[in-house]
Length: 155
View 1 (cartoon, rainbow, N blue to C red):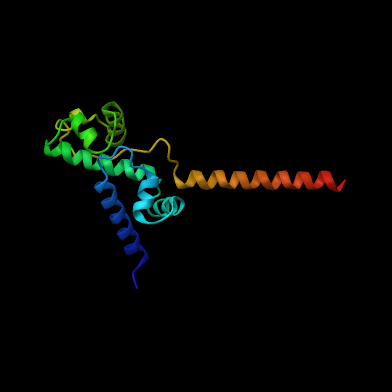
View 2 (view 1 turned 45 degrees about the vertical axis):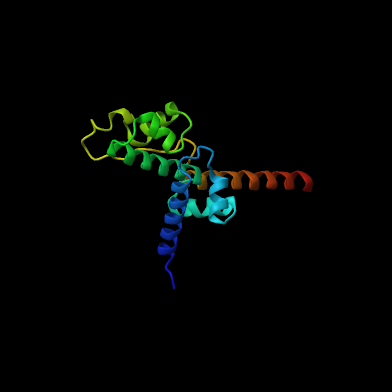
């Protein structure tokens, strides 16, 4: 029997291969990834979130940025060419995402002699702890509202 961790690693690896096969397509998104993986968009989100604690959209972006780093470290492409090669339709947006992810602009990649550390937090992604806190607040507010309505109707 395959362990859960091995199954999750295989899923992530398969998903990474699908993203890399569609890397140049700047329109490739979560719906396309779900279709290529053969699962629904909601199941893809749940599987990616439970495995990586990220949204599928953030996972796609991070995969693109990691590939961009390899291209730029090898000196194969300049910044604009790299942006288009990894599926960003705008070099300016690519530079912003790259800077947010790695902490320096892509033009300074060769000046960075130290080990590259990832300091990125997807601006549209909340960590799982925030999601559970919001759910708890919503559940408590819903309970209080139902209790208040019940008290009003019982009088």
